[in-house]
Image 1 (cartoon, rainbow over the protein chains, first blue to last red):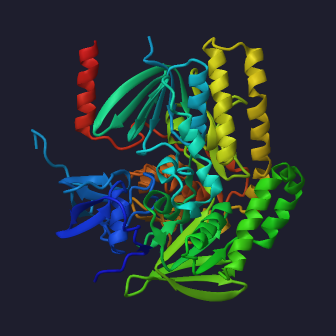
Image 2 (cartoon, each protein chain N blue to C red):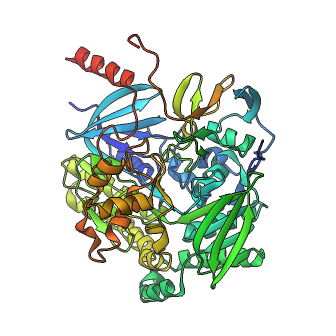
Image 3 (cartoon, rainbow over the protein chains, first blue to last red):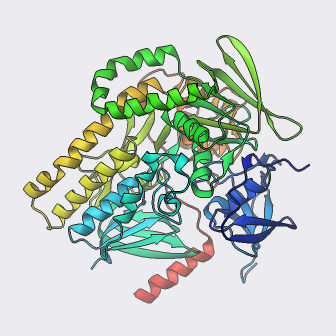
Length: 105
Length: 463
């Protein structure tokens, strides 16, 4: 079930960017953080802990690491420290990051 | 040979004012900040907001002059730059866009500011529960306004956010305050000294008047916070007020219990720390100029003890004047002379603090919450787990780490150190400084192995 955003949307004027979150196309004002854009989009969880508990961005200043999502295939990305960009592909982070990629894996 | 004369870590009021003072005195300054723009959290986005979002108030807008003063050829700035290691030398290792760099300087000034004190209660990890300061960051940086929100806790920031929400046309549904009559009684002896900062006191009273005039429902002496999720994703918030259980439904529950210094950087650098009983937090030991026991390392602003934005700007200026003297740009007489104004400003700005610390002290249940409360959000460890571990013999934070993993998730203890300490101290009821501050080790922010490996190549190339 989609939970309505807990925030009034940011003002409509000004340039916009478009990104994808879990296969949904989202429009957001240019220059805001990805965490802000996700909170403006819905009130749903953006991450699940290793025990399955639902979490969303919390401190908005890079301290708590609750806002971790997968951005363009990179998990454990702090969305509150990432400026939303055109064409970003964002997914919820489910559980802990697993070791992946690199030449030796 | 150092890269620059002075590296300043953190572009809040202390860092910005120090950078401008040092650069005007002839020093080459490198200013680093994790965020994309100068201002810190208090003046976040201030230059970009300009005259828009006027509901953030005049105090906020006044931060723009500190940003303007950074326009100096002697100051180079790096934003989006995360410092993850600080060594003697001094040497600063910082990461930007996935690449780490090493910078050296004759002096390093740490102005890393503060974070909100964690406010643990059953349900504080649910989507929809946030710190009040986090909501304010969304207001400043994205123009987003909290909807159907309850403000709960205590402290000047709670009133400020409520007033800003009212001015922006989205008043809070209720303000639930935890301060007790006893706290105000304890604060009264500090009032005469606070008169030096009477204008700030009046501003605070103005905020409370605004909240009353707006007809916002207020509850006082509240305790036993609990949040449950409703089926539609909203929150059922319950608490005790005046001996009565009260229930409020809301989309957002914004909590606040004051702020504490960010000390991961100063602790990892090996600087000595002391317990500030009035502020219930550790802070680095500094002298009147912000110098520490580590050669070349200085601390100013809220990261040296909470004083607020005006105190931070004054302390930043004092630290910069002292560093100018240490670099031979000023003699000590000139330094002292030029410091007089900032010294007076610091005294004025700090005069209200003991009153505020006592009147809006964190509640006992915030410091050491009930058993079922998650304490370490990263590793999902409850207060009951911590107490169980104590009953099995754990006496300090390191043992707690070993047995439970508290503080070993990505936030590195930023969200649980204060709570674990308070739970450890609760049964002793003695001088709480008998428990040493937890160790912080580099990297103080997560860095990938690939980034570390690339850094070793840079070092090898340099040799």
